[in-house]
Length: 600
Image (cartoon, rainbow, N blue to C red; front, side):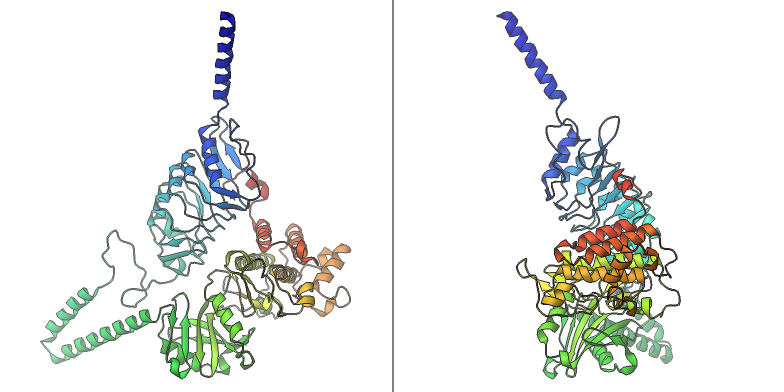
């Protein structure tokens, strides 16, 4: 009996020791806590199991070979939802966190700053909100910080300048506001790091900050709340000194009086500008005039804008848009805007017109043309846009208005930016937006060849899954999907088809209905299919693209062919198209992502 008790005790102790040795590590427990706050719709993390002794073989996880501590979490493009758990701070040896191009929301957890060895932080392409935790400035090893394409707001913390090893910074396409600090390394990053934040100003983006007296002034940050420009009190001291000195001669007194009147007029003008920077303005409504501005970023009085609008004539015409004539309007400070005058034949369609306002007035994205305002005059309806200097892709690609033709890298850049704009309409707007007229003349280019998708006059809001089609055929022949021509039903997949045609237009340098296609396929889609079947790839690529590589050309054509599939159900979503174009443009091949390189 005593022997059996002894054996049982030994077995129990052995079981305890085995169980203890197989217990999940603390890093593994932290990862499971992180998993619990994620919405893993594709079950990508199904092998993250509590019964494992180590997380080092889990999807997206890399560990240090000696102590099995987690050093990398690499989960991009996994369609993960939910929030980033504060438990991320328990991974004290973490060096790389890559959660880009998912659907994460919520805030950047402050606890992430407990990961003192963090070197690369990729959170771009999510729906993160709130501000940047200033404590990120304590991550002294951080070399890459990519928070682009989120909904982050507030000021950029000066503490980011403390990151002496930071070599890649991307805060673009968010809602940051105020002056960009110039402290430390922040002063070394240029426009690309901050583009797409309309309310930012500063030396790095060559946009002066507006001082309290209305003068452009980029001012250094200070640690106290003392204003860095003269206040009313300091101005009055100055004025009093001038008045006292002016007692000596009438001439000096006159100068002082004129100076005083000038300051008063300037202050009055500034107060008026602030008043009219409200979201909605209405002037002289009884006379049929109405002015609305969006985003509060038109620093002009209503009468200044209306005066300029009423003075537009045929000499200011720069083209025609979806609804009518487009003018260039230059303000007194040389700021330039594009004004679309609605055709008389369209003015009766108030529902369509107001829908365009509703869409554009609420959308802000670097790759979409920004609507600044709307003016209803007794004689016309006018939309005010940002002026995009280089004109349309159609002009540059086909009309030879640019001395230097677009090279292949330029075309890839245009394709990628345009895809970002359309994907934003399809996936990030609520309600979602179908453009319905994607074409090269609706892709505008700035001085840096950054594309901006324009003309949402024909767009349709998608309220829910059961009401996702429209019944009025609109758009341009050659870009329209077959089912759209037959039924008049537009959806995201008809936009995807049009975008596929746009890609082929960039590859071939030919319009979709070029006469060369008549004998072989009727349009660019059929022509491509014919030549590909005959292995005539060299005849497809625009001969002006001397820098094109066969790998990237084949990749883009493959994406375009998927987009232009005759069956709309077989076409990809724009999010997939965007992901594939990003991979084509990536300076690092996909295997670098798999190996968790900090260079990608």
